[in-house]
Length: 95
Image (cartoon, rainbow, N blue to C red; front, side, top):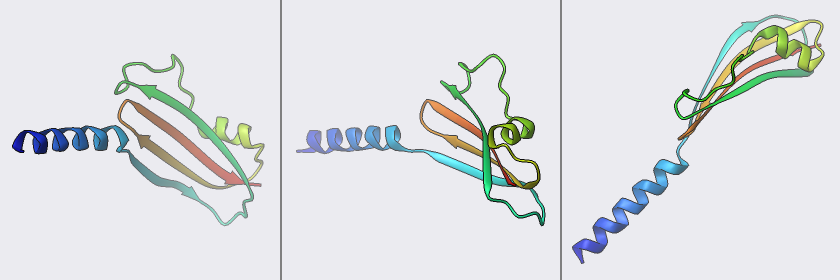
């Protein structure tokens, strides 16, 4: 009976570690300009940042270009961490 409880605990802990994720979201810039368009610059790293793109471009300029924005309303930075993958995003809203 005790052996079964240990196996159940081990597998439930392993499953929860595989499904867990953490996300942080922080505002960088906010203005009074109205904003309907959204531009996102996004890159991902794997295995705790060991495998990543050679040139990560998370700049505000790239997000503005991707969203075809001329006037910036707000800029946010988001980092989403999963077990082996981390995604970095720069989110720009505006017109």
